[in-house]
Length: 198
Image (tube, rainbow, N blue to C red; front, side, top):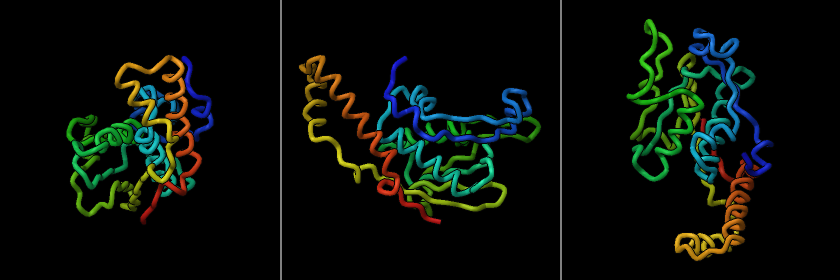
């Protein structure tokens, strides 16, 4: 399986999952997600998938500092409905990493380890996306805007050619490289794409 080299340079996200520990899945419940893991689940790499990964990583860093974040013990709230824009796509990535779901998630064992009702939409008290620790109630809100990173001006024309099935093989390859360069630039310029509110 071949993929852009920069995927390997992206910081991973490590969490402790009590359910995983209870069921003997991972030693001490320690689970680690890479950007490649998320890309494989999503099926592609784009500014939205990158943003969801970055948002989650930075929110967990803020909330847990030097502690290991606790998977399944984080409430995530969105300002928008899951059907609006890329909200649902971002929510899926956050679910993969934090375990949080709305009504469809794991119901728990003996009233422990539940994952449902840990994700909310249409929360008008949220700027964009809010993460909350259930043990301390500490929150952090994050706004993400990848349009602050310039896109190569050749991308729109190449994309249109691909849509119209008139792109050459070289143009298809070039489009993919330019698209992933935009994603790489996002990871290298977090200060330009993220606003954190406490």
